Image (tube, rainbow, N blue to C red):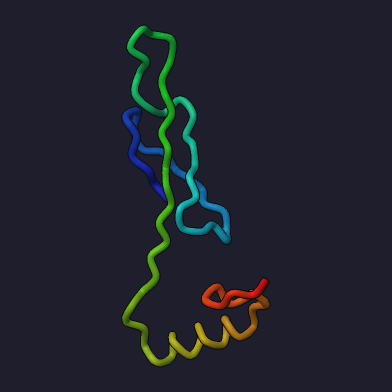
Length: 79
């Protein structure tokens, strides 16, 4: 995924399974320090956006995929 920074575009590779809200640090790609001595960092916060208007075929594929996952339902409170 290309990310714009003050030093130009950077290609950021996002690992599979990355959740919304995770932050990646691009070291040395930020603004220059006021007193010299390098550049700051750029923080990139991930926002996962899912499509809202799925076709019937896509909805069936997503349902099949979710049925295969072995994850707890985040909407329930299981201690």
